[in-house]
Length: 314
View 1 (cartoon, rainbow, N blue to C red):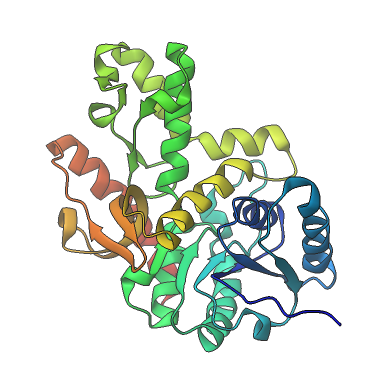
View 2: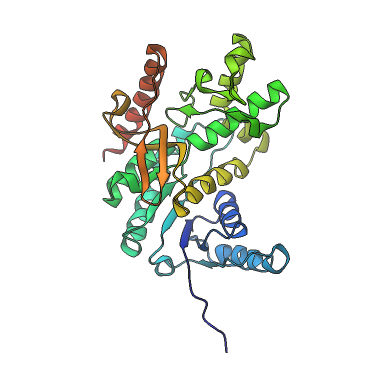
């Protein structure tokens, strides 16, 4: 007779593609929670979940994962990570995905809310800022419980490019990127350091500009190399960094796409800024001092997001 296992924390990952499946894998390998992997394609989430469970005896994790096509199996999830949607192809911008992915997200969020009304939503689907705003409106949740994953990823790319330029270990670099998850994102060299030393003292302005531009085009660079897909290792790692801070109530300061209503002079919009993530979701929006130029860049980035929000007629 099969013994029922008592469930601990429960995370649903919507979308069993590369980002979703890799996110699920990282969560269970770290023993953070049990996972429900859901997708509309029959057999795909079930097969990936079974494959991951068959790895457990070797890898040594005790968290469990099930694959399903039925949203009833997601009931009472603590966190729901939404990766569903079409991925970019070479030559496409994130904004090109807008109408198709908005339709998918409306359906997903409606079904998730019905089963897990107390969950925290972590959005990964592009165009990220607009999709996060849409999920906030559709869900009816408090804004602190609807969070977009972008800043952690963009900052990780920025940190790696800085480390690569200086020949240092990436973990020695602290940096973050503000603004929308697109070409208008705002890297902040003034707040980027290597073991406490600002990169403005380590790299010349030309090199910093090159790194900034490469960061802004980080996703497109990978799409152009892969030809038939988009990034998933770094995005999934970024999701799990956020999930871990929420689940373990770590109160980490992380750059995330969140709802702004007056902060940084921005209103009724989702945009990337530093926040403190706790068991409640967004515990606090961190206000840092920005120069006039940096504030102007942040506003320009948010204006691009607002233009796309208008297209959805929410």
